[in-house]
Image (cartoon, rainbow, N blue to C red):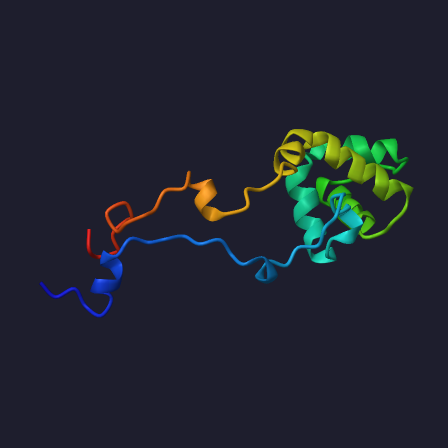
Length: 137
């Protein structure tokens, strides 16, 4: 049976080793990034995905913007423009986003396990537990 150039390497168990600490680049921070600190390229996606049009209208109305006779797109554009500034209106927008998604925020704020093997229960993987390459099933 011809296993090809990688046959013998795939027959050995796959051991997952932790990434050495100097290779992991993390900046210790005790707070999450605020919306105005994200790249402006992300504001459109954040506003459009994380707030419904009803919620967006409520937020903009609270901020004193004239939302009557405005299309959803106009209001979205106003919120995206606002997201890049650091002022009271943007702080309120950030607060609404945090409140709206507090369950997800608290879930992802939990510490991450240190090693990949710990995340897998310390198991070692072999080719028998790995999916077969495409075309060899």
